[in-house]
Length: 245
Ligand SMILES: [Zn+2]
Image (cartoon, rainbow, N blue to C red; front, side):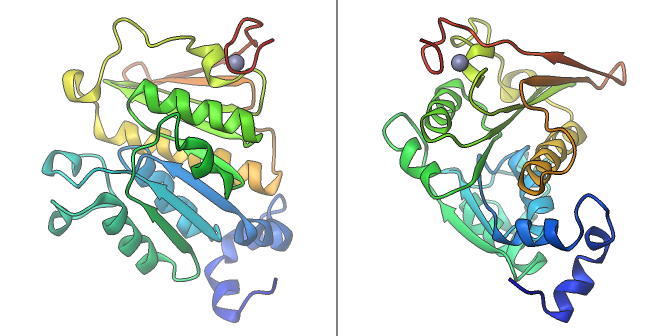
């Protein structure tokens, strides 16, 4: 896989990085990444992965753009309100980088279709806001051995983790928390979506290129009000219904 002069210019800041360089940029171009949820987290993640030159980006989201999305979903513009998110996203990402193939999937993922959805991709980012989808995506990733980059935000705090088998996401969240909060109910500061979504994109770039140490088996927690981060190590749950036994 060779690069045109235009691509060499476009990716110049990657190409001079020791940990990426030509081989890393080739791996990005050959990579197929699925982003589940084109919302607060998926929007910045998609922008950075398209800008980075990931060859194929799949986007899964059944929603249309709402005016209240524009406070943090930086992929969309006012004219996109009412349009399918994946269609608006595909247009914006194509304008950013024409070398990237965008596969738009205007569907909701659940236990019946998640495995088929992830099958054609090398790794999966999940930035959705409901646990049923998260569990289905996690189970599909474990079953098909795809790395999962998972992000979540609410109010002023966010988290990002990478799951590569054991522990899996459901070891961390065994069941739907009884007091699960939604951003719609409790709010979220817009720039926090940019922080966590960008971290998800960064972990994806590391996984694809082999640069550095991925956040595998660890969870990074960000408290925006305190301006503090901490990283905790996760352990596999032997009784996990997805990866245990
Ligand atoms: Zn598990």
